[in-house]
Every structure is written in C-alpha cells, then in structure tokens.
Length: 132
Image (cartoon, rainbow, N blue to C red):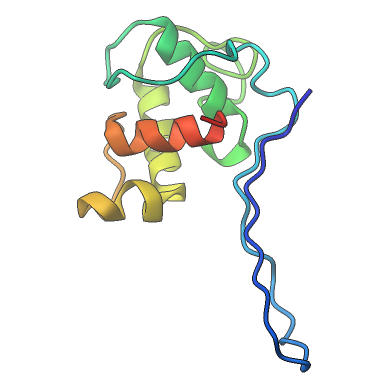
C-alpha cells in the first residue's frame, strides 16, 4: 500500500514564530485506494458523458479515493463497484473534483465552475495524483 502525498514546506529565517495557521492542504489519496489501477497507466484521453472505457473505471477509482469527490456512496460507481460508463454520477463527481482543484484545473483556462468534462487540465491533475 502506498500513499501519494504532495507537501509544500515554507521556511522562514525569522526567529519569531509565525502565528498558528492550519497546514496547507496536501493532495493525498488514501493508501491502497489506487491499487487496482496499473502502475504504468496514465490518463491520456478526453472523457465526457456517455463515454465507455477502462479509463472511465480508473477515473472513478481516483474520484472515489476522496470522500468529497466520490461517484456514489453505494451501488454502481461506488468504491469497489466502479464501472466503465461515464454517467451522470461520474459527471457530477468530475465537477466536484474540478472545483476542489480549481486553482490548477479551472483557473488556468479561465473557468470559474467545473464542466464535468475531463480535458487536458483535468487529465494533468489526475496524472499528478497518480504520481506521473
């Protein structure tokens, strides 16, 4: 099992301690959550509503690794029951994912809200979470 974490450290030369602040959010996926995605897999294809492919299943696995982007709590699309169909639940989960990482996915292309379409900036973030 492996946890993929990105941590940003800020070092200051000041001898005065900085005021207490919550740590910056790290992009972390739970250990073991991505074990069913082949290590050599990378997202390369745009994915939209209605698509069917193994890429959609791997997308759902990544989305299900975080409680705030889960495709479904139970049934088809839920953790362990991911499918190859990009349906309405996947589209809504992609929107939540895009808005969660808006600074990296949406802002660079001038968007303020998620689209539910997996394009280049969303693909880049997904691959970053896979350690690519």
